[in-house]
Image 1 (tube, rainbow, N blue to C red):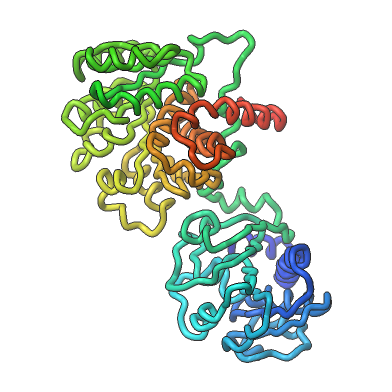
Image 2 (image 1 turned 90 degrees about the horizontal axis):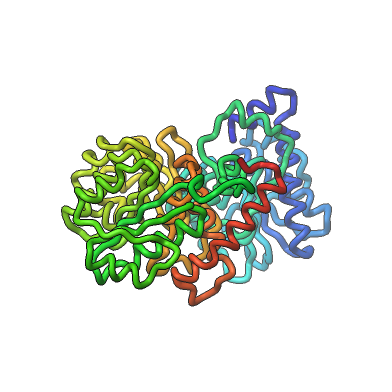
Length: 486
């Protein structure tokens, strides 16, 4: 964001104009949602504080009873912030909690997204003084949240509304920052979108705009053999449900053919429950490896309830060395503990790993303490050569080349048994249709969230699979309407 500001200023737009535009954007967001009332505007010592001086002036002119408190004396401000402070003709109050007394609205313009140290001093007392019923509007990002990682730097404001500029920052979408932002508004302040080409951001909010060009559309002259063949490995006779969920999800997402493979006894259980998906009875990992030698079987899922034993590791090794696009999930990840390098060295085709936090720590123990889900996923993708989907409320999808998609559409109902198995099947089903691994993983996570939206409490993984056609049709309609699908 600092580079976007610099490029815009270098192109001829004064910094004061950008600051005035930013403050005006916050002002418009406030007056659209709140009636005139007593408001405390808290200004920090930098540009975020400069935005606050603009907000205070505009709110006062609109009939709000404005109290302005500055963390730094106005005479010590520099640059654009000093220029905005000179335009304020009202009193400046002490930066103490008393300024909040009786205020219905608080504008947090203290630090914003650039903060890189823990909150301390007077700001701590101010944050703790906010009372229930006082609405907080954050300028750029609630003070105390890292714009890069979403981490809480000791303590942070909890906003009802956050107004940021040009583009959202990772900290708006990564937890815990995401929970502190309230409603997020991204405002245009006059920065040309072409700045992004010069900046080259590696993080994006997940959605169809990111992967729509690679999304497989149904062709009027197409047939099932055009759309790939997904193979899903099942576990023992009492543990086939997870694989069946993954297989049905792969079929729902467009894989032309799907086969669930299992040992002879388990295959009979699978056959009793599956109709559209085929079933194959195989005798162990060597038989599985031979089954994958047929290049038409171009996507494979290993892991859902596969078993925590050497056979699962051997099956994962067979999958990644087959040349098919592979998804390793659940038990396949757990059995990689201490041996992940063998899997990564054997990879011959696209590979997607879909760990939750515990599985991630087993596969990538040296990376488990990195400061954000995005950072952990990116480092794991770089080190492994695989696309990594680090699952959670803010699931992050990372590619080995440094791209990261942060997902924002997943409802809490997805925290249910079997949900991850469905996701593994979706991703494999998209890769069977030759969608590239990163795009397939990002699309899979987004479709997974979209399918869950509106299902409400009580949704189970079986329901999620049956809602996939709605999510797929919504996505295809959107992409066709925008002319983006490939």
